[in-house]
Image 1 (tube, rainbow, N blue to C red):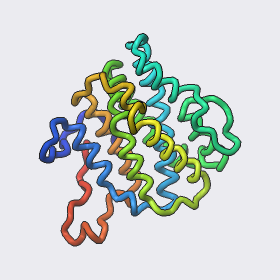
Image 2 (image 1 turned 180 degrees about the horizontal axis):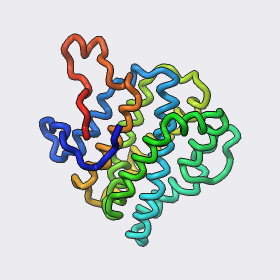
Image 3 (image 1 turned 90 degrees about the vertical axis):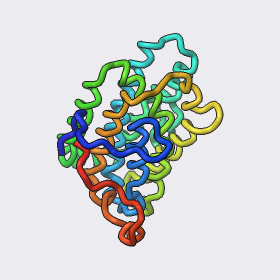
Length: 235
């Protein structure tokens, strides 16, 4: 899998979509999350950890660019060095990726996942880090708008019995609470404009999900002729 930012086959827009990145978000939400088993979800947990590492980097860039934006400062207080994800023996203030890292390590998942996915994780991070700092900041504002819907779809998976997944489910549920609703993280940064410069970020994110083939398998409804996730490579 080659995670790059030169997308040659864009996801087509649907009626009412003004931006191409919205089409990619729609495609991610439309993946077959219900298909995932426990092993798949552990992969998604590790990929989410990697994505959260990059999110913290991008958020700190945004803070450097907009140091006096009160909403951004308040949002960052709930994302960086915070205690709002406390669970079991995780009691320290930390960035949200540190929460996932704690439970991956606790359940002996870190090294197996690194061996299995490390090359792809490095490619994703390199793709994101190649973006201009202003675009990386914009992806933060966009993620505060979009991720709660994506996380809600992840929670449609049925098998959360594998080690560590109870913590991943807590992480997803808490983020939906943080980001959505009046006064949530999305509202706090909603004054920042978002445009299709964030499209390559979402394309790279979608490409990482190809590491979970069950997401792209046809469901019974799809086989009957309903809409299906795209099976073509993005890049």
